[in-house]
Image (tube, rainbow over all chains, first blue to last red; front, side, top):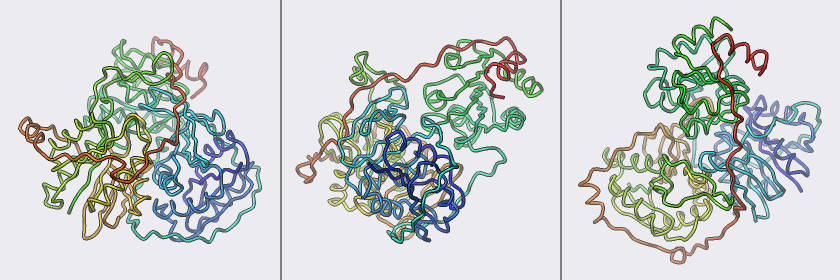
Length: 309
Length: 249
């Protein structure tokens, strides 16, 4: 059995999400190759070659793949992936964008967001925003799978020495163009990769009060998140949102401040290793998932917490 | 120009869905059904484009059992002009839905196809992208802003850590994210008017598409429960626990 993992990278470095996908590929078993598609992506391919257990890195280095446009990447992956039993990618914004195109081109289903590998054709995945876990079996000869990164511990990044093979296939669908990118500028880590997250909810009362979280975030090197209630109330922009329809996170420490714990929020953070809740309502549902609950007025607790760290 | 909007009937987002105790499936007895929230955003966007004079006609399509005509009527009440119901029993998979929508597109030739990025039942996030691959159209997924320009649509996409803007040649596929707009409520007069708007029913046979399952659901289970935690008395006890017990700071 052969599995192809599509690398998540920025042309120079390999993103950790790739290692989560490799871990899922390892759980399936068989040979693992990695496809690195990009432009000037040699350094990323070299990093991929160091991942232990990888037999071969296929490097498709061409301008048409520079911005990971789904139309072009989809055609490439469908061509390269045709020789494999499984095609895997991390369930990132990028993986979610091109992988269903690959599945459709190969005329197979996609199994989205797998949480575990039960056997070579059977997987667990969340449905209904994680309120239910489904066990699904694929009857396709070839499996196209996206991997929930928080469900698989990253494979080691160093120690392997795979061969790197150039792939010269150039696929330009000619229907899409990259125009620009605005990456949120912040000295803080990204929400989806941060090991500590502190999130505010409706209890923060307004956007200005989110500054109370900043001092703590600075001390813990944490990302700042928010509940949908806080986003809907206009306290913070939508890219802060943790939850069913926002970002799914699983940091080592998640601190929920003034968040009641609505289903849609819990769905996005309940796989965090340690959860702390600070809320003045002792009956708030967030306390049912919190490892450590503090019933307190956040406007008193937050300055105290910042001082104590 | 013509816009085609796909809508799906799903469990209302306020319902907490549970696995049946025998683990065979989710318990959907007597739960409230509604239009998928992301599909509602798709309808709203099409209606706004029509109000702006960019779009002349909006066709709302749903694939599913006869009950999904209710959600097509919702789309019509929100401003779609006519509906197409592709009648399929059971729960068709995203690939089948994409194939059926491709056949509808072949009949309707829309310039813009707007879908929700995912439905809140299966959480697959596949149909729009699959439809793109099958039709050869470009896609602007997870859209938070769209602008129709000459022969193309500019889509601001929500990606990890920021926003990406792409230009997609028409005809194009757009899948909606939450930030794209805030859907309106249908007014009572519009709900009444929607009942008189045309709604055509098609079958997979008429569209020459065979609907085949590729994936079997073997069972469902509730997610693992978190062990009950403790309440701490004050901030210093909290910091102490995080440092010495959980060892996360």
